[in-house]
Amino acid sequence: MSEIVILYILSRYDATIYKISKIMEEMFFAFLKPSLGTINPAVKRLIKLGCIETEDKMSQGGMASKMCSITPVGRKHLKNLLLSLEFNHPAHILNNARIALFCADVLDDNEKAQLVKNIQNHLILFKGRTQEALNNPYLTLSDEQKKISLSKVDEAEKILEML
View 1 (cartoon, one colour):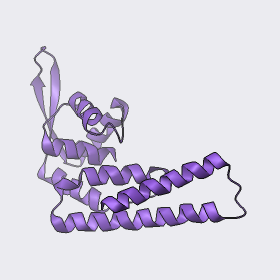
View 2 (cartoon, one colour; view 1 turned 180 degrees about the horizontal axis):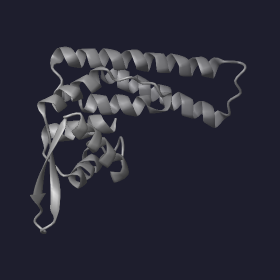
View 3 (cartoon, one colour; view 1 turned 120 degrees about the horizontal axis):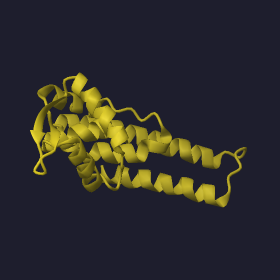
View 4 (cartoon, one colour; view 1 turned 180 degrees about the vertical axis):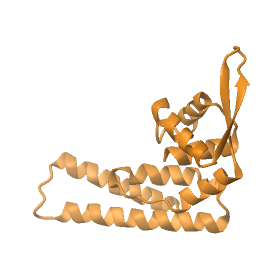
């Protein structure tokens, strides 16, 4: 998800790695807060892929910094990442769906429809599996565990209603 968010930010602004982290905090505060230790390697991978280019600049304080900008390859890669998004980890599905939908304005209408369909399918599966677990007579869950699971089903339903 870090690569999607980084490329999304750079599709809107040129920024240093530090500025990328600050924009992430401001723009995606409700969804994620990656550290510079997560952002730096992701930016380096994206540079190697040709998705980002950098330019050495001097900051106002006289410090050397690298200004990052997205390339045409990066714009295409961002779209591909969004359209091929897999929801492999159930604990992250709701957050990843929100982030993908938040970044969907870089897609055209057909691509958005494809993304929405992918998210809908995964949320429906997530809801079904969670409800199946809740109804499993051999699975002993405490009241708190049931409430948490039901709240996740409610979150999934709210996202589905929004779509």
